[in-house]
Length: 227
Image (cartoon, rainbow, N blue to C red):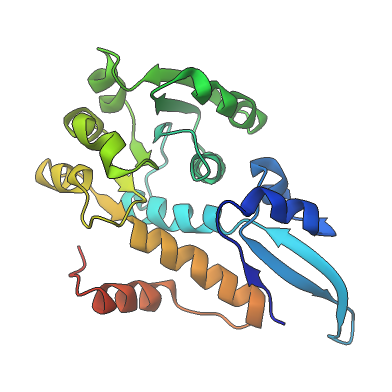
C-alpha cells in the first residue's frame, strides 16, 4: 500500500488515525494524505504519517499569479476546509496581513491559525460596504467558496492584485472571468488539484511528477483551454 488520498469529511479524522503528523497538517488541523512509514530497509512498519498537501496546491497557484512578487497583504474568501491550508500558504509566501472575507463570524475561527504564523488577522463580512476597498488593498485573493457564495461579489473580489479561485465547477468561475477582464493574473482550482496531487504522488512513490503535466492533462481531459 503506497498510501491514501483523503477527502472531506475524512480529513480531520485522518489526523487521529496517524502515528505521526507533519507540522503543517498539525497546524491546519486536517490531513488529506496518509503515507505508510518505513524502516531503514524500506519495509513498511505498520505506522502512518499524516500530511496536508493542499498547502502545496495553493502554493502552486500563488506562485503562478505572483511570480517573484512578495505579497504583504492577502485575502481568503471563506472559512472552511480549504481556507486553512490557504493561510499556511500565505505564511510561506511571507504575507504580513490576512483579511478573511466571509458571511459570518465563524471566520474568527481562523484567527488563531493566522496569528500562529505571526500574521495580522482581519475579518470582513462579504456584504460589508468596504469590501471593494479591502480587496483593492490586497496583493492576492484566494476564493475557497462555491460559485453560488461568491457570485454576487465578483466585482469587488476581482479588485485584488491577483486572483485565485480553487473552484473548478463551473469552469471558469464568474470570479475568474471578471478578474481576467480586469487584467488580473489568475489561477484556477485545476492548478491547485494538480499541485497537491503531484506532491501526493511523490510521497506515495518516491518519484517526482510534473504538476504542469498533470494540469495540462486535466485541461485536456475536460476539454478546457489553459489560460
